[in-house]
Length: 145
Picture 1: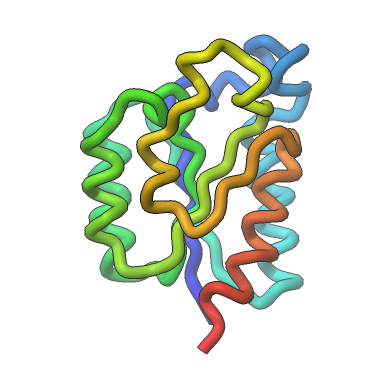
Picture 2: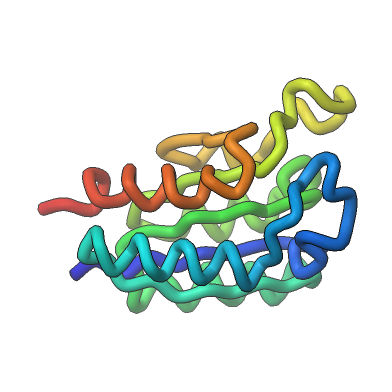
């Protein structure tokens, strides 16, 4: 059974409360519950992590090297700023899928660049919180074998 680490970056702890017109009404707990239910159906094991601190996210990626075959990451604002998260992901041997709840390409121009995309095996943007589920479905294929 493949283990997938789901990592959420800054401000995603405020899902459902912060800018619901952009990010929707679901909470992070809702996203995690939906992912856990789908993972069980797909035969995946999942664990969840959220932090507003770049270093903590990097430590989680490092830990995933020991026990995960894949990472689903929504780096949030660190998408556009963090070479350090990119470097940590480059040290991870498994599959990586980058997820964004909103369509970042329809937003401010600074959001159009992602450091993480340079390492990601797939990028999902604009599917709302359903993007996490799409990522898990793709992880089945990427981690098979």
